[in-house]
Length: 279
Length: 279
Image (tube, each protein chain N blue to C red):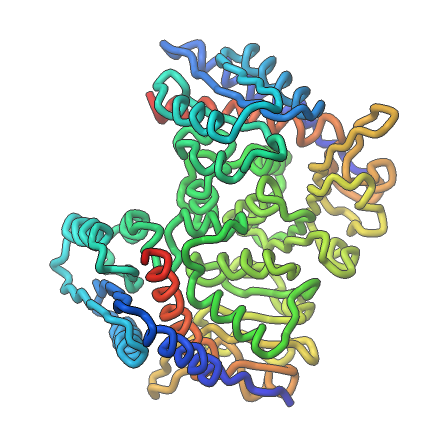
C-alpha cells in the first residue's frame, strides 16, 4: 500500500518560509489577477489565490470582468500593468471568455512579470534550460513534491499523460532537464496502458476522472495526479482511481490535497521571485 | 531489408520549387551567416549553405571572424543586421568560439529574422504550437522526410535519442504537436535498448557513431539518423550501425544523403518564408 504524499503540508511549509522572508522586505509584492470568465471553478481558484496571498503578505489586485470586456480593453489593461512599477506579477486566469484571444493576451505580458511562466519567452527558456523568469506553477510544484519525498529523477522513466501548454508540455521539458527519460502521452496515444506500465513515475494531467486504473500502473511506481474534476455530487476527483491504484503504487498524491496546494504555493513563490528580481 | 530514404532527392525537390518561386520575386532574399569559430566542420557547413543559396537565388553575406572577435562587436553586428531591412535571415553557425556567450547572441537576434528558430520566442511558440516564425531546420527536415515517405505520425511511438536544444528537444515538441507519442532519451537514460525497442519510429541525434545497433531496433521500425561524425579515415558515419540495422528496419536514412541535405533545404525554405513575411 502506497504512502500518501501530503501536498498540503509541503505547500504550507513553502508558504510559511515565504511569509518569514516577506517580513524582512521593506515593500510588499503585488500580484495582479485578471478574471475574465464566468467559470465557477476559476472563481474558486482566484479566491484561493487571493486568500493565500493575504495570509503570506502578498498584495493582490483582482480585476474581474463580465462578458462585455473587449480584447482591446484587456490589452490596454495589461500594458498599464506592465508599465506599473508597483505591480510585480500578472496572472491571467484561464480560460478567458471565448470571444477573447487568449494567446495574444498571454504574449503581451512582460516576461519579467509573467508569474505563470506562460509567455513564449519563458516557455522557450524552459525548453532550452536557460533560466526562465518563472516556471509554470503546477510543473514546478510537482518537481518540489518529488524532491521533498526523496524521489530521484535521473535515469527514471517518467510518463506524463496530457500535453497541455500549461502542465504536460512544460512538465515534460522540466523533467527532461532534470535527467529523467520522459514519454509524453495524450489523447491520440495508442495502447496507453502499455506505455504507463513502463513508468517509474506516472503523472496524469488530463481532467478525465479515473483514467488511470490499477492495471495501468507498475508495482511500486510513484503516481502523481494533476487532474481535478468536480463531480455532480460536488466531490473533487482526480485522473487516478485512487482507492485501487494506491495498492499498486509506492507513493501517490491524493485529490484534493496533493498537487493543488503546491500550484498555489509555487504561484506565491514565483510572485516573490519576480518581486526580488525587480527590486 | 529496409527501403533507403533518399534525403538528397527530397531536398533537391524542395530547392527546385524554391528556385522557381524566387524567379517570380522582384527582390532577392538575403541570408546573413556569422561564422565565429575555427571548427573545420562548421566551415564546410557554411560553404555548403553558401553554395546552395547561390544555386537557388538567395544572396548570402558571410561574416567570418578570427578568435579576436569580442562579444561586444558580435552583439553590435547582430543589432545592425536586425535593423538592416535588406537582411531577411540571420544565422549564427554554432558552436561559437568558447570565449563568446552563445545564448546571449542567439537571444538578441530579431525573432522574425531567426532563420534557425533558436530564439526562445520561437522555441516557446513551437512548444505551445503557436506558429513560430521559423522551425529549427533539422527537425523540420525530418518531419518533411517522414511525410514524403508516407509515414503517419498520429499515435505512433517515437523515440528521439539526444536532447539538444537544436535537434532533440524541438523535434520532440514538433512530433508531439503532430500527435505522435514521443519519448525523449539521452545520455542519462537507463536501459536505452529497452526504450528504443518500443519505437515505431526511432530517431537518433547524438553524434555517437554506431550507438544504435540492430538489437535495439524493433522489426519494421523507421530509423532516422541525424548523427554525423567524420572518422579518422575521413568517412562520414551516423549514429546508426547502418549495414546491420537496415536488415531490421522497414525504412532508414543513410549518412550522408539522409537528414543532412534536408537541413540545408529547410534553411533555404525558412529564409524564403521569412523574406515573404517581411515583404
